[in-house]
Image 1 (cartoon, rainbow, N blue to C red):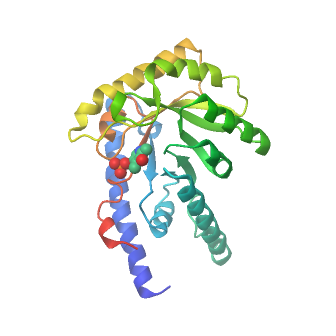
Image 2: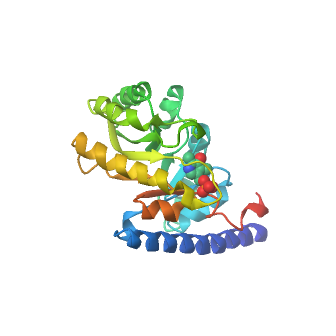
Image 3: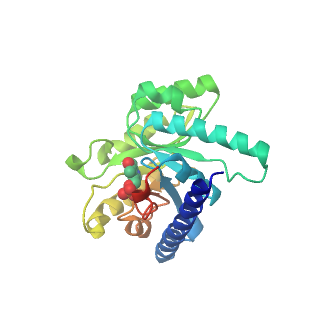
Length: 260
Ligand SMILES: *Cc1c(COP(=O)(O)O)cnc(C)c1O
């Protein structure tokens, strides 16, 4: 390894170690405040604007859950990381971190389901029956039961994607008969605001909806996730019941300036 690469690598690991520790600490506090254990809340690292070496460093630090909002970006990165991991395993079997678990968090078009499905751990952005049927159909072909969350639009016009609150129960009922799709919970994307407390009603609404739907449709233990909260408001989201927070900016603080 060239000296400059080595120093960049140790720089990344130092910054990410600090940021991860701070965020995990904040999550743990907020979880305890909502009567839960810190392990009940997952940190999803949203890597979309970050170069590959940053993702590699995250994996080495044990951060396996990674989120992307474009299918092409996700599939390319998954392939590159797999190649790197294979190469490094030959050199040093102990060197690699955990295998990445990819989350699709952006709007998903039906014609992108095929390349995505073999790679993705959890789809956060299911919002139509047609998309559900596409996933179910291709899942059948490749022998996979796909985990997904229903994306809910809790704030009306400010949000482009997601299902209106009133339509969520009905979609979940329709999806229940699709054998290659398993609905694990709900997701929402709150509008960007300056004061995180203003998003609290949105998170509270999603939590209420989650409980309602679970009860009304007698959903089992696998319906357990609420994906809500980003860098600016994840602590509020966790206090309101989030089980997955999606964080980019706060995690990469101090790295942006360096570039590739
Ligand atoms: C970019 C993105 C995030 C992360 O946002 P930050 O403010 O950078 O933490 C979370 N969720 C979705 C759907 C995103 O597109």
